Image (cartoon, rainbow, N blue to C red; front, side, top):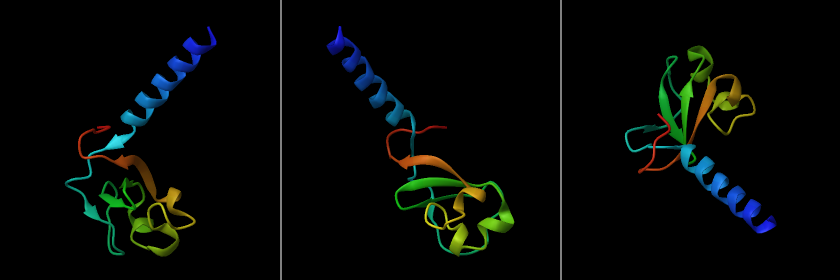
Length: 87
């Protein structure tokens, strides 16, 4: 019984991680610059979508995945994976 539950948890964990992957092959690498709401970039092997254009363009604290306030300007779309996409 315990082995079955552990196996099912492992399977769920595997599929959850697979669903949270994004095909970044067509995305530009993030560089500090001007980004409009809805812009897509990759940074540190993750994909991001700009949610607040003015803040996405500030950089520094708003740099996706690295700045202390990035979550206020960007949404995390998942880890880059060239074979699976969350969209």
